[in-house]
Image (cartoon, rainbow over all chains, first blue to last red; front, side):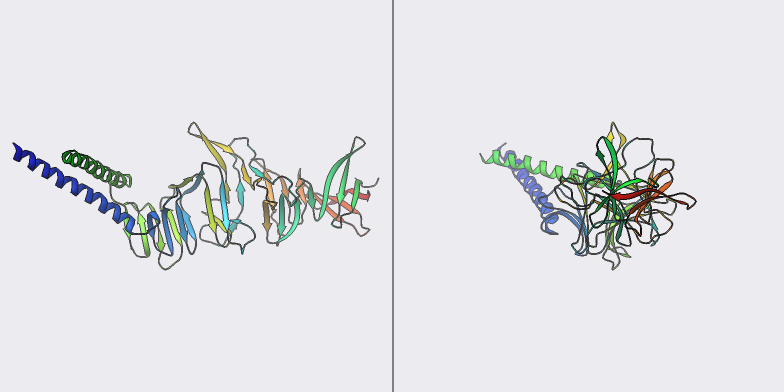
Length: 186
Length: 202
């Protein structure tokens, strides 16, 4: 009876050791590939992986990262989609093209799906001084909505003010001078 | 004491091994009842895909690009996270599409009861940084508007390349005349110009 118990315990010990060794080996193999990553695929030029100590998925390439699908859907719990870029560029530029061609197409914000929402909100910050939106041609602004929400056409800012209970349309010229706009011929 | 320790080790070992095998099996089954394909498959420098090659990620040849894709025309690609950050050194973010589509469309949505509900797309943030949140850039003054506003069935407003704004089908243009006075002109669809407003000293 004692021999049977001893044999049983030996088998249990062997199984236990084998299991621990197996698990340890597998964990070691996973970790050995790239330190600092939970998992990693690719090489030093282009890769995808999960950095240790984060909840991030990181896709990286020295060149471009190309997403190709019938439909691209980006889902962010916070609703924030950030476009980061190198400091050599002054802004993030969004461009649309026909696939694989240099033929450029419009970017449309919103969709005619029967849902009545404001398709685009351009948000400034408290005390905004710079323009809220600019329209440029060959890099030069031709029109804008300035930080106070005033319309600027061709360098002339036009805005209404209330004087004596009457609305007056004021034009501010590029040199800072102002004129009251009145109907032509009056 | 020794027996108890051995028993504990046994349980821990079996649990861990089972978990590992289970996770591996789940991963394989999740990929379509077969192990994912990973390796150096010409013309790819490295390549990872499901067994049907419908969804893949890899580096093509000697290029320095990372390509993620789906082969089916209707296969989607979903990216989910607390926040999506796209980082591009040159600042260009391109949205390519088939020629059957006439434009790239960007929409916002939340899912309510399994149904997508449209939300506004906001550009910029009130984070205390005084920057121009949105620039709409055209390269030349051509026949196309720099920006249009579409009510869903027709264009209701636009900014033209000459800096005029179109409302109600009539373009309003501001300029400084030879006498130094501001003129706001209306340019009709047939090109006729009417002076609406003239500036007087404030």
